[in-house]
Length: 313
Image (cartoon, rainbow, N blue to C red; front, side):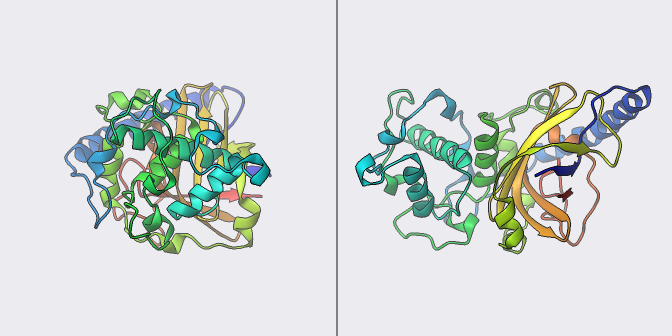
């Protein structure tokens, strides 16, 4: 699949492109600084019976452990059909998540395992994976029925966790604006504050279709542009799609800029609409056109709650 994404591109420098890029960065920086200070005054979102946002504001350190699939208590013996895929599929079903590309799902399982270890105050390098019944449910995020005995994840957690699972990065417990613009991982505290701007029900954005079946999986982005104007230094990236969710990872300007964002998606004609529920700090340098009929937030701030339109082929 060759994806045409209205964002980044080009393989050469030109004086005009460099000047346009500098002017754009300067203009967006002013707005981002203002939005950053406004967001610092937001309060964290608490919703219903879900786990509190404060429970996630920590260094999880999920990359510091490398469990084997056989370490998980519900893993079956190979002779009984046991495999890494079996472990992941059983976990996705238990926590109420739809099928995800295996690499993303495996990392998401590792992230939640490390999160549980932090909650139980275990030493991460010594902690064994928790039993299947201990994992919180994603039911609200996936429109599933919540098992009564299972705690419910905060609805803002899944977009952030999917972003980490795709990029292979950890998140910062907190960061100071505008210094966070110099790094790629998002701030957990800022993300949960920004999530309060989101429209709670995103189910209309999730419409399984023949397109979603064709799009399922991890793809390399091969053609990247920004309204037909190239970004100096070129760009590369990848994106995964499941039936409802996506995450895009794009690197530009010879690796100096990192744009990562995740959320829900749907297709209309030749367009794919990304409802962005989590953005890495540098992603908010993209200028987004208003889409009143599709916006996930009444006032998208720093890119969270905005809708990105992409063409595909």
